[in-house]
Length: 371
Image 1: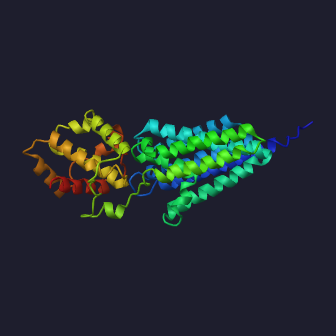
Image 2: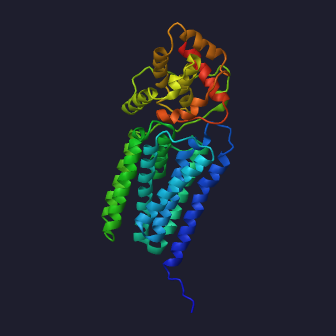
Image 3: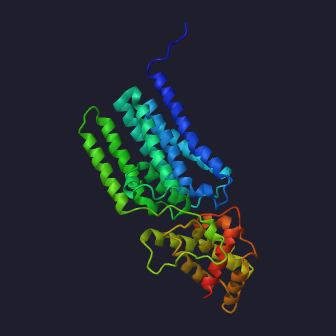
């Protein structure tokens, strides 16, 4: 006699199918971005794509199965899988593997905690609420990407999906998770208060703690925002005399100062900084300022030129430095820019694809630093 599925089995299967369906969105987006003519587009949009994938899997699976660790574990596997897919499709090496992993782990647990609460409070209908939440937050993220000024900043500040986006994106193209510490604290705090509510059900008073915590953590993110999302304006990058990023005139904040110190330490061990040919050595060092400028990675990018200027002064013969920089500025098409792919060794984002934008940036920085 054929067994009839129990009432709880069918919603679980439907919920798991819904989680797989939401996972298709970042996968299809990555496939579409594969051929986009921009500096590492998969890295530029990696934050929101990973956030949607983690949210869809962690939240819906935890709600459908009623198991926190199943949702968190599958979300973590989703994050690893999406990163590997992006690498296969051409995304450069991760500049901050530890920071990326930390952001993915905390986001996975935070999303799964919400799914676990939905399962405890709504039983077999929990996955429907999870699907509704995932669809709403994903729609807001997509809108903010395609129409950057269409939504008020306070709305994005309230979204855990935006917190995850900030934390992951800062690890992919910025200074690491320290610059996005408020987003990580908000994700972890939301997970803790949500799990408290789930544990104390059916009591209702813990919801006051959860909602108060959510508003307080949102205020933290508002008062201590992470770095702005990176951009890659190829029209500016390829212009023969376009502007470079403004060079900072004020001291860096603590997170940026830490990142700069790390870059400086790693330069001492970077093979490209010890290139035998002085002209090629200079070009390699200029990449340290040129590539982050391509990604518009403030606040780091505006502080890197001073570091590069100091390295050029220390590593080039004084009687040749001005002539070498002038030659690079006049002929940015010469020599190699292959060292751009090894910048993750310094904790900086790599650059792949068309060489013209980065060569143009190198030439512009050579002219600026020769002054």
